[in-house]
Amino acid sequence: MRVASWARTALAYAAGCVVVAVAVFEPLSRITTLRVLFLMTLVAMPIAVGRYFGMRRAVTAAERLRAEEAVRLTLARARADLLAEREHIARDVQTLVAGHVGAMVLRAGDACDAAPDGPVGHALTDIRETGNQVLRDLGNLLHGADLHLDAAELIRAAARRMSAAGLVVDLGLDPGMATVSPVLRTCAASIVQEGLTNVLKHAGPGTRVRVTVAASGGGLSVKLHNGPAPATSEPLPSSGHGLAGMRKRVRALGGTLDSGPDGDGGWLLQADLPPRGGE
Image (cartoon, rainbow, N blue to C red):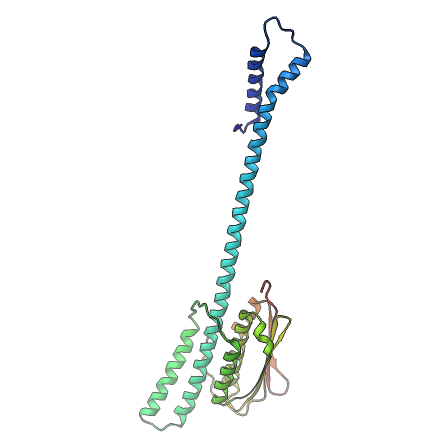
């Protein structure tokens, strides 16, 4: 039975009863209530069976469509999560590059001030101006990336570069961070890089900074605490993200970031990154 209308089904049932009655009953046959009920039941059986299998096919088709839609939604969510993770990593990589260039510009500027006039001084000036332009361009540029970074090594490399640039960096890394989600580790590395760059920008060389990254329950805690600035320095151009960008990335991962003076002339930056569900 492929007829969807119950009215047409009733019409087919009545017609079936008439046809069977004509075929079964003879002109002289006695028509009794029992024979009529038996006839109606006999005609109803194939119609009922047909309606039953028709509804079973409809239910099966609906369940198959729901299953296919569920698979499509699952794949769409997986693609969206992958794109979001790649965007987070790309932003973190962008911040790391901006920090490297910022340190380069600062050192080139110091060398330019100390260098005599001539080709060397012109070259250092060109390096500083080019680096400043790169920092401005990075503020408007975001490349997608699928990178797997060694966050601990990135943090150590950042500490070495900033130490070479004049900061006094005291680094403490929890070995347990190796078991944390790569996204959290990459975000922590970008926070350390950006935080050290900000200390170098605003406090200047000679400032002492204590950096700690600790793992707890699948999450990470990042803390940068610097003492008072020993001297003032010329501010560098911003990469376009800075503290607001760090806070946005941390919030996207469900964490919190606090930053402010410590009351003794220094500055405290602390970020808490909770475990990511499903990882």
